[in-house]
Image 1: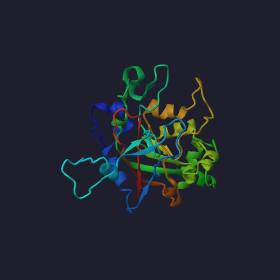
Image 2: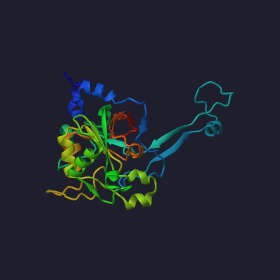
Image 3: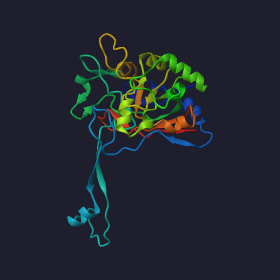
Image 4: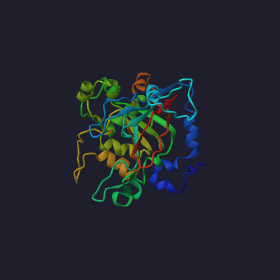
Length: 303
């Protein structure tokens, strides 16, 4: 008999993954048979490509051995006759830098700027960020992962700029790969975009392919708890169908805002695709920062 995870009183801020049955964790662990791991994140660095609306990624020295010496600083207190030094830095960046996961409070909709679980700007947005559904509530992920490799299915290296992946194609790719998407899964959709990293010009020429609203409905119907792509926007942009009222990101709205399905972006799925690894243990441990709207992650696929 399956039982839900013990998540305490904050289930409304966590989403459907709060009900992940314990036996699914055990089943996911059994997918590890060879002991091979795949990192699903590229290195972050100052000047790295980012979504245009985000601030740049910066690493700035705050302490250096020479700075300590010149300032005659004594951070340890006692006299330092050994010339012991250290380095410490500021990392100034949005939590949406590189491979990352959106917190449930990342996106809002409507005149009241509401988000999943009952959060709203008037009630829950402070000067230090949201206090409901923020990154401090992000859960750990330890479940079955599935790779949907769209460019390999189409016989190309990378999908064209603005190319949509619809529900029928997701179904066909899974059939070709011999996998079935199941409840509690994390589904990762490759477009080939990170195969161009970090060539800004090549990336711009293939910008924002991804799943459309029909694909989002397909994932929702199968009970996934999270999904990710290798682009900065997850969904195809511009959206082929804006709907009424017009919405430039209908996939984010359906999955993240309305249903609490976590979204990941800028994942590096190239090694998985090269080795044709379509089913694996997916592990991600978001950084819990109060008031943040997402978390940089370095997820693992393990087989």
